[in-house]
Amino acid sequence: MRPDLPDPATAPELFEGVLPRRVFAYLMDLVIIGALVVVVSVFGGIAGFFTFGLGWLALVFVIPIVILGYYAATLGSPRRATIGMQQMDLVLTPTRGAPLDGWKILIHPLVFWITWWIAWPVSLVVALLTPRREMVHDLIAGTLMVRRSPMERHWRNLAGARS
Image (cartoon, rainbow, N blue to C red):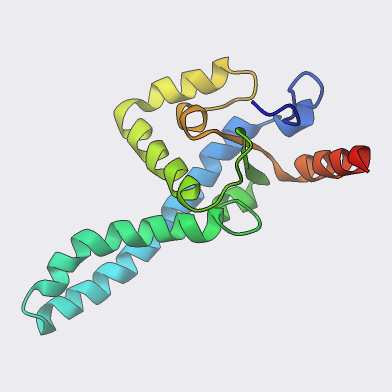
């Protein structure tokens, strides 16, 4: 863990309500991803007629690419949050010193979906037991989810202390 990461004992405002906010952000993102999948499926369905079924076969590959593209575009943005996370005032922060870029951005959602499919109750229990409310996929991917607005103040205070 990086020493500049916030501690729930000294900065509780960063972690207040993070777990319910994550759930609502996830539900918002599911709606957005669902809409993207419907749009791509309609185009793939139409393309399937004109390509003698190849468009339908391509959907098996295109739909996961669209979903990962959503995460890459949103988590890879300067806001480091999906649209649902942005609406819930959340930001994804690296915990192991390396910035969130490249493959690390894709690892977080991939590990999330795998752990969610396998044992979502375990992930929620782990989040309730960790002081920073980290879920299993956060621990594996080396990320931390905190409230954005208090975290921006935390970052400003760190920058001011260094100068």
